[in-house]
Image (cartoon, rainbow, N blue to C red; front, side, top):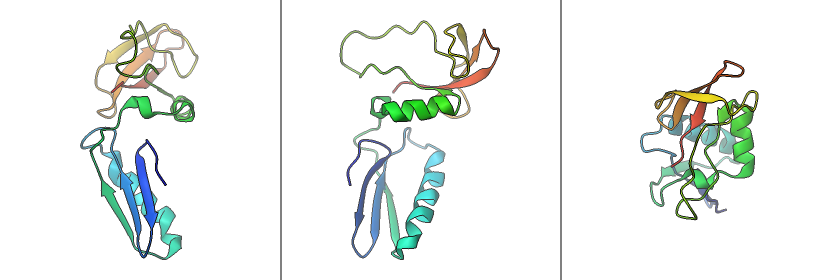
Amino acid sequence: MRSAHLLRSVEVTDVVDVVITPTYSGCPAMDAIADDLRSALSPLGLPVRIRTVLSPAWTTDMITPAGRAALESYGIAPPGAVPHGEGPTPLTLGVVCPQCGSIDTEELSRFGSTSCKALWRCRACAEPFDHFKAL
């Protein structure tokens, strides 16, 4: 199986060989992702080997529409959907609030709960939220 997401490949022989790529180097979620993969694959009864690769680098362009919808459902504003290097550089005047849909938002801190997110607040509903940074 091949994918252009965090999960790069899975090959099953006498071992389940899984290749994953972090969103950021040093992403703290990678250990949890690897643990979840081991748990999900353990019923196969085979040893599981998980490798982390950094190339090609992951970018936010790889987030699918379903992935963007999932981020929003968890209260995280996804990055813009303009692929890097294609067309003019988008100008971000605001980020859409994942709670109420308002564009009347403000960045509180460039650094959020993790390295890949910034902390924003909606002026309309007053809710804080994470915004996944574009890479």
